[in-house]
Length: 276
Image (tube, rainbow, N blue to C red; front, side, top):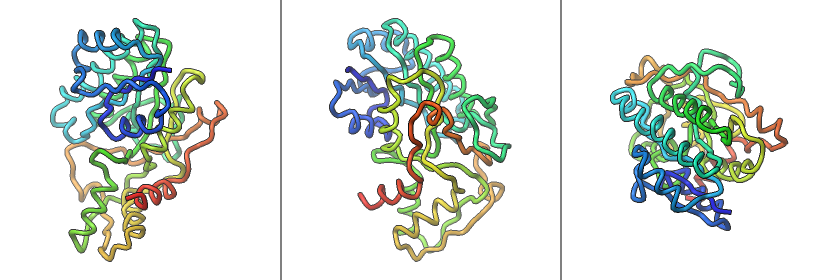
């Protein structure tokens, strides 16, 4: 089976290559082609003709998206349109990696796959527009919404907090945003199980939930850090882009499809940090 992955040099792409080691893997990074260019995207898929394409390439800078929304739309929306058009031309199902930030975060229970998206920032809107291009342009798709990703080969919260704990005696972390930290390796493993199952939209994140503050506390505990982790509100920790207060995803479609949920986020985090 030929599996293509865009964003192959990123965190998720890195782990997809590890998990699909026994497949014929086609790695698409920015060196191979620019997803925002329709002609180069069509040419790349035309040349390789994959059986499935995991579309992990994205502009993930949430604050950068607020300051330069055109860049977010160009990559996350138009880039996804181009990839989907290329896949549809060759009857290749597309697996689009979307985000919990398509929801507004005003609820108090996990979002199911059929809950109505309502993004409150430009990043979330750009990912939602990508979803709409996928559902409009093909009927052979998996939209996979995930949350709070961390992994090797990319900037992420876990590595940043671990570094700051070594450099500072006290760090401030917001405690009024709730979600589920998700290991890119665990996500890649579940993508392997999902491919070949029923098409549709799936929420896939590690189990249970926490605030960013609780996430940082667990990192500090596992790193045996003596530094203080101080809780602050989102209002105190001002950023260009608003964040949803509650973006926990319910992995409902996974269970309906007969697939197990991912392990607890604390177990995944311990494994990540112990592997160094």
